[in-house]
Amino acid sequence: MPPATRWDIFCTVIDNYGDIGIAWRLARQLSAEYGLSVRLWVDDLASFQRIRPEIDPRQPSQTLAGVDIRRWDPAAAAVPEPEVARVVIEALACQIPEPYAQAMARQDPKPVWINLEYLSAEDWIEGCHGLPSPHPTLPLVKYFFFPGWTPGTGGVLRESGLYARRDAFQASPAEQHAFWTRLGLPPPKPGEATLSLFAYENAALPELLQAWAGQTQPTRLLVPEGRPVRQMAQFFGATGAQPGDHWHTGQLTVHILPMLDQDEYDHLLWACDCNFVRGEDSFVRAQWAGRPLVWQAYRQEEDAHWPKIQAFLDRYTAQVQAGHTQLLDGHAPAPDCGQALATLWQAWNREQGAGIAWPAFWQCRQALALAQQEWNNRIRKLGDLADNLVHFCNEKL
Ligand code: TRH
Image (tube, rainbow, N blue to C red; front, side):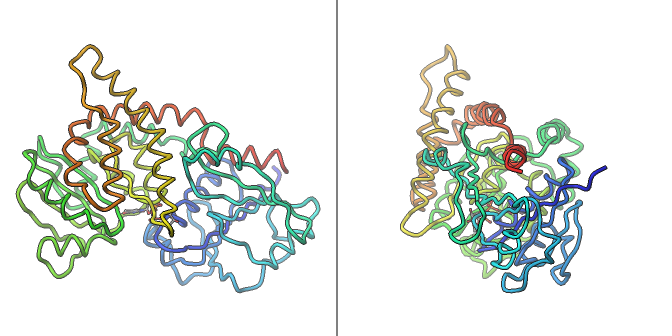
């Protein structure tokens, strides 16, 4: 057998967990499903450890799920020349070390060099996906690879077997029971809504907590520890919060969870009736869960995130309306679920008005779940990102 083709993925953790979350997901899939020899260079192993507790931040190199993980000091020298990979990926627009680029330039044939960009539903993505960018001084070409939800983009990550595992979990009371036991919680009570919340700090959080406390249906809110937890504690008059803490008011019970490992977080998304998610990777995973979701975009300077929110909403609400019409076919005029969703998402991202917007959204939950599943069926047809990337690189090799 010929040796496996070597791929190097470089990842700089800017803040939060999305950069490493995505880079790791991709690295693992390339190794497991394509038999590639993947090295993942990460500049912040402590963040990596939060989503994969097996990672030891003190180790300069370690192997996990077949992936060779290297602690990357961007200031340090490059890898030895013979080890330059055939495919080199800069995850989420990070930059490879200059000496490494010089070593790439000395290879014959030249490695394939990919700039894996951020995910967006904006139209311009299609025009830029796959474009070459010649290096200003070295004889190298870098290609832009844009994830997206439309034909003409790179698609989104979806490892093989995801649907089967999700469906088996959602159909199995025993698997779900085991999951709740691992979290130290009883399964949801009949009639109780179960929500998860992974968000940035958000000024609209208290009004949403009030809305849940005041509605007729009991609600259990599960919050992995992180940025909004202090706000949550303040709402309940506590000085701080840690995993295991829980509070109760009106119809609302809140549980603070530890940060879960990435696969266990999937179980949480699959187990909940609705998921609040953020950034990029949890947003995609919540979509694959097939349940209603509320997205908080990563806030950017000069409100650069708003065109992304609007672009996604434009595509998505059309799907919601189509799903809704199908669900209520022949019945009384339906509330506008696309509008209900857009109003809540905009309020949540504007950090105002989410409490008022919640009831109309929640009334639409059946339609939203259906629309999500239809949306997923469409996105699956685009092929998944790893597969599209492998094909793209193989054509260039
Ligand atoms: O952490 P994020 O806010 O990451 C963001 C975005 O990726 C954004 O695009 C980027 O520019 C910015 O970081 C720097 O949200 P995201 O993308 O959802 O990533 C979170 C990761 O954490 C994801 O892989 C899921 C994982 N996770 C767990 O493994 N366990 C958990 O308990 C939770 C809540 C998340």
